[in-house]
Length: 284
Figure 1 (spheres, helix red, strand yellow):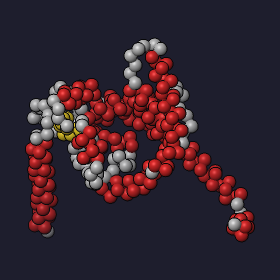
Figure 2: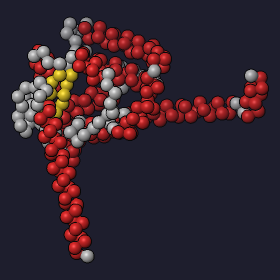
Figure 3: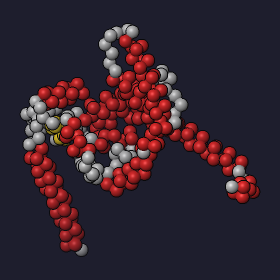
């Protein structure tokens, strides 16, 4: 009996060691390939984190690489490589290929898991393919044309906000305004939300989304901190509070939309009785 137990333990250890060695081998091979991609000198452990402290430094790095004339470049956030495309020709080649979405242990998708769940953005493999097939018909041109008026209305509100801010200063940071317009369009088109995200009525939700974007960038710049330890930090606790705010708001909208659809279906069901439906078919 003891021999069988030791055999099982040794077998498990061998499998774990083999998987560890294989993972390290794959990582080293990937690093050798990525070293051929244009990039600035980096630290062997920190990568470019010794000079990138926030989103502004990240953009500055990209601008410096763009000035060198390269069509793509690599940036290392610790052990996590990020390949960025900064030329239309390279983007055309990338977007024109048919390939399955692949995820790995080094991607940053898992940071979004608590916020967005395992949907189209987060999932991979067969689950991603299934969700993509279900959603693709919804983005057909014949369907999107029905949302043109909604997009135009959101654009008009955006222009009014820009003009309003320009009255106070000739220099306007349009990033928060564009973010609100995008959020406004998405909420109206996807959830039929009758309310402007560019107005002050949903200030708590909008500020929560914008703050979570900042926290997400900060989290990507601290890849060595495990998730459980991050949740114990000040930003981790703030992240959880903001998730409750955002998900609570969207849940109210979804529940209201569901109740609206159910009430319409109930009215339709009671208005058209079997006898009336039979008469309608005979007349037809």
